[in-house]
Image (cartoon, rainbow over all chains, first blue to last red; front, side):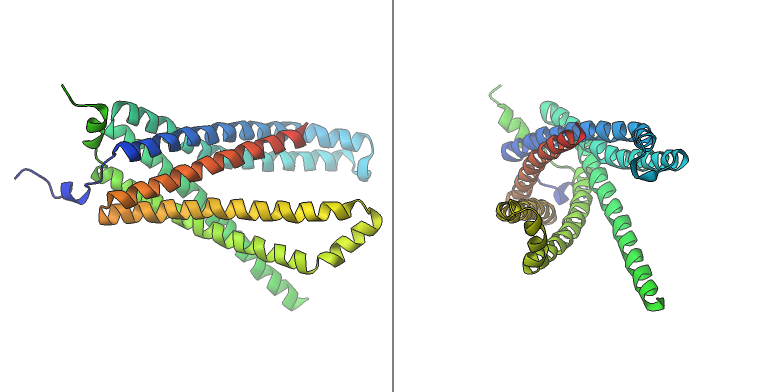
Length: 153
Length: 142
């Protein structure tokens, strides 16, 4: 009598098999997230030293680039790399949260943590999906401008 | 008293909220996998164009560096391995998305478990690719 209408909709169980799959998934997801954090660190390292690397390149007369142009280019490279690092950081963070919450959920049979874990996985894929949409949009724009440019050339 | 941990796990269900969140997750995962399939298709076309026009491209370089001729087969092999592994990863992501979604929609425990299994393998392969990527990045940096 007191059963709500939602109960029969979800009769899926986290049985022994699925919990084993989820545990393995969480372990590997955590590993991927940590590798991702290390890569983010490397990207930021490159971003920090890009300016000085380009400055030293111009000091030794590489390619005839003057100091101001090298500094400008260095700044641009730094900003681009920081942006890439930030964009890469968030999916890794979501993945890390998914993995840690899933491990806690499986250890304690915690329904709340299981929901939080899935929510982070969703956020991770949504972030990647939105990035892909933006990327495809840029490609479509480039194609349109390319065709227009070729038509007026 | 006699309940084991397996039994307690069996009583644990994917609740309404969890199921809905998982359904949304699979929707985005499916989108990512379909876009990846498109990217994969583009890579295959580029590879086929390279194979078709290979003699023109490689002929120029092998005249300059005859040792490169031996590298050509290795390069093609590397491309094929990359395409094969990438295809496998994307297929696993697609299977995770579709089977888990179908499992939730039809309340089929077997399909649900198959989806989670594909997800596990997908993460395992991605982890291997991630460590290879990290090693290559470190090698290029230093």
